[in-house]
Image (cartoon, rainbow, N blue to C red; front, side):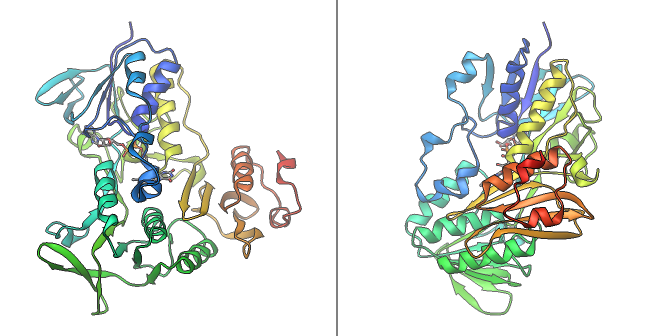
Length: 405
Ligand SMILES: Cc1cc2nc3c(=O)[nH]c(=O)nc-3n(C[C@H](O)[C@H](O)[C@H](O)COP(=O)(O)OP(=O)(O)OC[C@H]3O[C@@H](n4cnc5c(N)ncnc54)[C@H](O)[C@@H]3O)c2cc1C
């Protein structure tokens, strides 16, 4: 009988690993240790339909509880793993040592916080888990004005959802464009305009330096330019920090994430890491070490680990992809544009359906699509197969990109 697999973290990666191991016919024991009190649930709706009440709690679980029982997966809720001893192959949970033959760290990430968040009044939130989302959803019911700090994916998704629900929303972003670290300027401009048209007040090159409060409840924000703005809720969305503490404590190397090889194995041979907490060398990022925060990455890395544990190792080579729903607009991204030196636009930007093809020389690296799922699906296949359409072909909406595959 193969040895026990101990998974730390019941998020996207942890659950996908359980599923993939059983699909690979792994016969050994599988234990999933979850810090949260909930059975594993989908995070993407939390910043979109869940906060306004359009999606309810019953739609969130990744699998029904019966799935775990049927597949002999022991799930422990409210059960944070507090330390790992890689020499004894043991993890500590609530003071009890639990042995493993393979340990998988799928600990995710936590929101970055602003200095003044530690003693913030009521009404100030970050958004990472269901408990955060429940509080934001409850708060939005009586909220007239919401301030969102950070125009990244989560901040903008939340802003769009709250605005559509009738809340007055102001977004503060220090950079000079929205989603500036992730998308081409054209896409930033498009989304800035659509959010503004929907009624969101987007303030670029602007930051919040402190809070105003009354009777323990936030009542406004102090802006870095010396002005103040009334707000009865504030949500901070300024990125995340990977949860690497267990790995560090166990003596495993980390550098903006738990360092893993192409099989998602850490430098300790029986310890793996995947998802938001793991940093790996990605062939689509020119081999540089990256930490990808996406459902795709968590899922595919988990499958890679399952293959190794089941004795059929395959390297992690999946094309990175991501989506973000902001109001009625869908942004989809395939590939990684780190090394791009030019880009070409395809489609109808005015009509709100277009894609940006990122190139390095004549090599296609990445495609960002707005309301153009067909381009996105073709882009994933092209990038996977290392097929680069000529820039004239990419820019010609009459040219059938599928014909190249
Ligand atoms: C609001 C929101 C919206 C998102 N929308 C999208 C989207 O539209 N598209 C997309 O591609 N991605 C989206 N993402 C990102 C995506 O959800 C993450 O990339 C994905 O969840 C990462 O999976 P993970 O398993 O690595 O981490 P997580 O899902 O964060 O799971 C990690 C789990 O580990 C637990 N844990 C941590 N430490 C311990 C410990 N010591 N012991 C036990 N348990 C522990 C945590 O409590 C957590 O439950 C979104 C994320 C958020 C927060």
